[in-house]
Image (cartoon, rainbow, N blue to C red; front, side, top):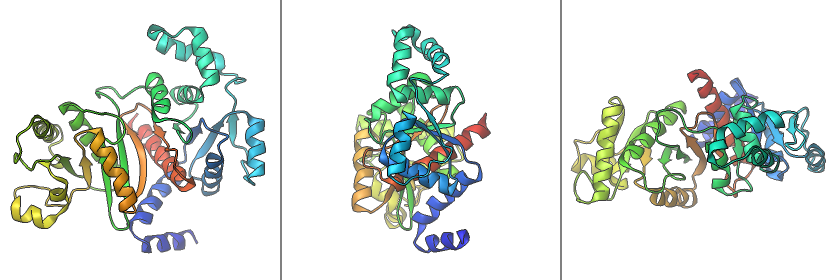
Length: 345
């Protein structure tokens, strides 16, 4: 039956095929995903799917009595799902020491650290991941983006050697999958940050079994417009080629040229992209954020993300408008990320 379902989904196009492959990877080695927003209806409905499909081992943060009563009212079977109340957790003292040690020279007292853990579940969840008591964190269905990402950066931080973390969206169309970055974190990236985004996005594309073809986007094609903004993209492209010589990448390039084989063939035959780019690196957050949202609405694409790239441990952010399917997809991404993180240790 499972193979038959996969066959039917494959007939519906690339979208279902990609998502099913990602979920199957998660099911092969489920990880512990902590949800700081444990009492939210959408989270509870998503947890039911994760349990039924054996995609992840959910951990809910909140008042256990409240969560179980709400789950019962929604006819959701949480089974033996772990539920942790920060206010009564036996690990509160240990977690307080961890947070205090990380932020004591940033103005945080021990009293403040304890209070923050009791009152802010994103901090509590981040420390859980940092301490190895959970493998990944997924939050944001009822929070602003910075409210999720700030605790993660303060507690876990970025990987060594990186300038910062970066945001990625996987846009899944019926017959095509593309990646857009940075769409959520860096407002005005430097040359080095653009190059770093391109390399990290390419690594994630490969993790989804897609060979990356990277377009460094601009309003100029290979020097057709001379401006500091186009020069920045040109320099970032050169840095990517130097750092990752085996990667197919080109720029600065306009989006239509990166997508149209005929234009590329007739006007820019020297470009290795040949109009078949699938990883798009935007020159700034404004253009990236606008574009991925337009693609989702006008192109009927499934937007999987934001995927936070460059963190030491897997932290991913939900959007307020996400439905249950979106949350399940992001949980599968979080599990995949945790699997990759485990392999790299």
